[in-house]
Amino acid sequence: MLHLDRIIIEYGGSPASILAIEGLPHVAHSATETMIPFETHMELLAKVEAELKLRPLGLILATRQFVAHFYPLYLLLTIQPSVSDSLIAFGKNFSTVAEGLNTKIKSSDGCAYLTLDTELDFLQSNIIYEDHAAALLAQLLRWLLGVNFKPSKILLPHSAPKDTIPYHAFFGCPIHFGSDQLAICFDEKYLHQSISATARFARKELSEALKWDRRSNLPAQLRLAIREGLQERKCDLTYIAKLMGMSNRTLQRRLQQVGTRFHWQLDSVRAGQARKLLANHDFRISDISNILAYTDQASFTHSFYRWYGTIPTEWRKMAKSGSTAPMRGR
Image 1 (cartoon, rainbow, N blue to C red):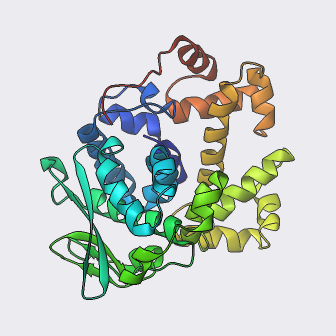
Image 2: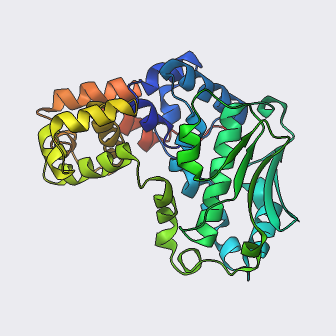
């Protein structure tokens, strides 16, 4: 569920409403450690994609979830002498972070292939899963080899969608749709290189591995500007557009072109900040309302209920009592 709630908000949806469709409690998204069964998770993603017409959802998710998925393997991957050794170790231990999935590294005619397959029936021919998995593997290689690494090609089993531009923008290389396997292809010489300094020596740089696919991501740039604005208790369109060096009209037009709106992105940032602030019991609800630049506490409470299906005081009680404990599964 990590980051899914904010993605839903960023595209004009209600996390609480979509969870209700799947019969899940609103607390299913109210803590970063919350887990739901893998199959239910994929069904939920399909509902989100259908409700919000949000495609390709798998790529959008991958930009937020790389660190969360692979951080448990951080030390293991970075102590290896070469990229090849790191990928072999990754394959041997991948099941600890993704049960039912298997990765392998193989070479042919000067090309290396990082492949992924699954024994789970509900993932067969699942486009969201294929996109998400390929994107995460591509980011893994980018992290291990440095931000300037580019794959030679991406192999995806599903057929080509009507709009392939997001795929080419994300991967930065040719995409082969309708392939008989899911794989990232790259020059075999990279296998013999040592792990990039960024990955090996600086843990805090792990999150920076995502920079390569955010360089031209306007919503990500906007969310950063909004966070900066909130430090000054300012988050109106005029102020944020000025921070980004453009007019109100230009910012709104460009956001419309990528399928989102200013107030959706503002909601997303506030929703994430609200949960973090509520976890700190030194902050009163009125304090949080002020920090998030709401005109009054009632407006903040109304927004929080719209996002999470409960009011801030109740969420804080549930979090403190352990009501948001993880459910069994992924």
